[in-house]
Image 1 (cartoon, rainbow, N blue to C red):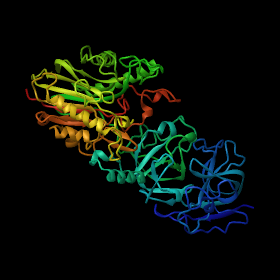
Image 2 (cartoon, rainbow, N blue to C red):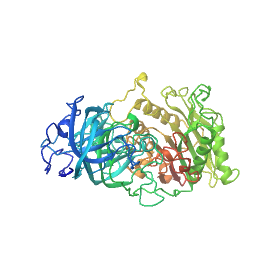
Image 3 (cartoon, rainbow, N blue to C red):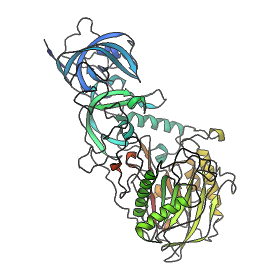
Image 4 (spheres, helix red, strand yellow):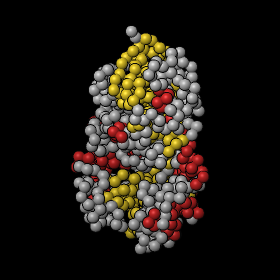
Length: 619
C-alpha cells in the first residue's frame, strides 16, 4: 500500500532554519528523523552509522534516468521538521551511477544507508531505497544576505546556510550575475544579492577593518547556481543561453529571480572548484538581460588613445617548452596551437579595429623584438588597408616573458624622437623583476602639431606574493605587493617629470594595467604628484575593467598630467571582456564547442576591458 503525506515547510528568512508546521505522522519505528541526521553543526554526529530515514524526494539528480540534465549520483529527500532552527530537514541520498530504484520528485521514500560527509555535505550512502507513497514539500523561502559567514576548508568566507543544507529552497529576490569564471568547467554562475559588487579599494581607501567588513558583506550575499551535474566541461554548457531571446548570451550584471532548488554544500564537479553552497535548480531559471553587449565605442575628441591588456598575446605557440622571453628561457603563454593563435589574432584584431584609437598602448605582448606587435599591425592592415597602423619598434624590453608596446595610426600621429624605458637601471625604486618596465613615447598630432607623451605600464599583479621583497599582503584591501607598486608609481612620476623623451611638453598621459584600484597607494602617489585619475573623476566609482572573486573593479587606469587634464574630452571603459564568460575566448581545449567562437565580434577577446580616452589637444 502506498501512502500520501503532506509536509509543509514554513517560508522563513535566512535568519531562521529548519522547523515549521508539519502534517506528517511521527517517524516509524527504527526510522531516524532527517533533522537528527543533520544535527545542529557543520557535520553529522551520526557519521559512519547506519540509519533508516523517510522523506519526500525534493530533487531528482539520479544518474542513468530519463533526466540527463541533472546527474549528481543521487537525490534529495526532506522530512518532517523539528523545532530547532539550526538543524536542516533535508539530506542528499547517494545511490551511485546505476541506481536500482528510479525515484521522482514527490515520491515518499524509505532509505537504508550510512551517514557520511562528502566535501562538507552531510549525505547518506544508500543500501536500499523503497518508494512507499508520495508527498509534497513546499520550498523554504530565504533571502540573502545571510546573517553570518563561515570559513570553508580553504579559509575562504561563504554565507552560513548550514541550516538549509539539503533542503528545497526558493530565493524570491532578484539575484545578479557576479562572475562566470567557473561556468565552463563546473557549470556554475556566481550570483550576488543587492546588485553588482565592487572591489573594496575601487571605492574606499585601504583599511584593515573596513576591508574585513567588506569581505564578510560580499560573502554573505553570494550563492553559486550549479548546473546539477557532477561532470566537468559538460557540452552543451547550461545557462550560457538561458535568457529571453534566441541570441542571448549570459553576462555579468544580468539578473534572475525566483530561483528554486535544493541547497548543496560541495566543491565543483569531481570534487574540485570553489567549496561552498550551491543551488541545484529543480526549475529551469531564465535570466534577464540587464547588461547587454555594447556596440562600437563612440568617444568624443579629435584624438583617441586606448589602453588594452591583450591577455598573453604570444606569437610563439605554447608547447610547454621554456623558450620564450628575451633569454629564451621563460615559459610561453597564450595559444597552445597554431589554430588557437589564429583565433586569438582574429579576435584581437576585431577588438582593436572597433576601438578605432589613434594610439593604442598594449599590455601582455610576448616580449620578443617585433613579432608580437607586427602580427597585430599586419592583421589590422589586412582589414583596414596598408599603412593604416604601424608600431613603435621598441624591441624586447626587460627580462620578463611579457612586455608593453605601442601601435598607432600614421595618418593621425607621428612618433617624435626615441622611446624611453623606465627600469631598475634608471631608478632602483622601480623593481623590474616584479613590475614590467614602463615604455614612453611622444606623439605629434598630424592635424595641428600638438604633442603628447604616453607612458604605458604594467605594474606587479596581486596574484603572487612579494613576501621575499618584504612586501606582504597587509589585509587592507590592496592585496599582495602594494608597496612594490606604489614605489614603482613614485619612480614613474619622478621619471616623467624629467621629460625622458625630450618632448619639451608637459602633456603626459599614463595608461596601462596598474593592477591597482582607484584608492590604492600607487594611485594616490600619482595623484599627489599632480596627475588626475580620469576613470575616477569622469566615470565614477562604479567604473570597472576587470572581474575577480565576484567583484568588479578598475584595474586599468588612465592618469593625465595637470596640463593635459583640461584637454581630455571623454573616457570610456568598453565592457566587451570582463563581463563575458571565458568559454567564448579563442581556446579550444576541454571539449569546447568550436562554434561558440565568433571572430567577427570583440566579445571576450581578452579578460580586461579596454580604456579609451578622447582628447582635444591644443597645439
